[in-house]
Amino acid sequence: MEGLKIRQFSAADAAAVRRITARSPEAADWAPEQLGELPAWVAENASGAVGFVVARTVADEMEILNLAVEPEARRQGVGSALLAVAFEHGRQEGAARVFLEVRESNGAARRFYERHGFEVIGRRTRYYRHPDEDAVLLGRRFPRSE
Ligand SMILES: CC(C)(COP(=O)(O)OP(=O)(O)OC[C@H]1O[C@@H](n2cnc3c(N)ncnc32)[C@H](O)[C@@H]1OP(=O)(O)O)[C@@H](O)C(=O)NCCC(=O)NCCS
Image 1: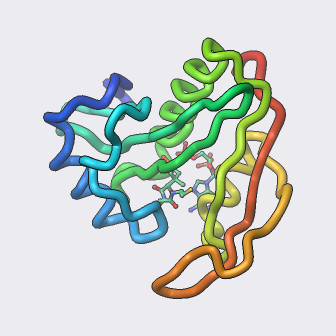
Image 2 (image 1 turned 90 degrees about the vertical axis):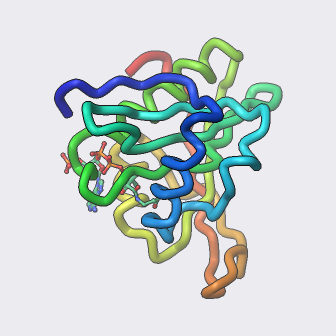
């Protein structure tokens, strides 16, 4: 996407993150206030914030906790650009592996992560509510560079 900029999340992005989350029922349903001290980034174009990612690294494992892009801005590389910045941060923190959970029925996200080298590494039975659904656990060894 032309003019796309990825920058760190700030409190001023709360309304945009709330809007994107409301329009992305497949994403984790978090209030921006819950982001707290977690590392988070926002993707912004000329019309404002169009996506965000939240990731944390504990020891040598990074977890992608949430990632969502405005429906109109999808399939234009925004999700990939956000993931690349989260990977870069994890690399600096010494991550050796990265993992995340996704609803079993979330075909778009599963294909997105597959495209980025993730494989199915497990399943969490009835992990999600409203509606009840299994989580598929996806993971990959940490990319050296992308
Ligand atoms: C998953 C998500 C973040 C992807 O963001 P995006 O900006 O559309 O991703 P990109 O444009 O970087 O997509 C890169 C590749 O991922 C795959 N992909 C993404 N969306 C896809 C879809 N709907 N169907 C098939 N493949 C898809 C494709 O391979 C795509 O490349 P292509 O467009 O050249 O075919 C976005 O669909 C989204 O916000 N979904 C709702 C929230 C969600 O499910 N979050 C994940 C929860 S863990």
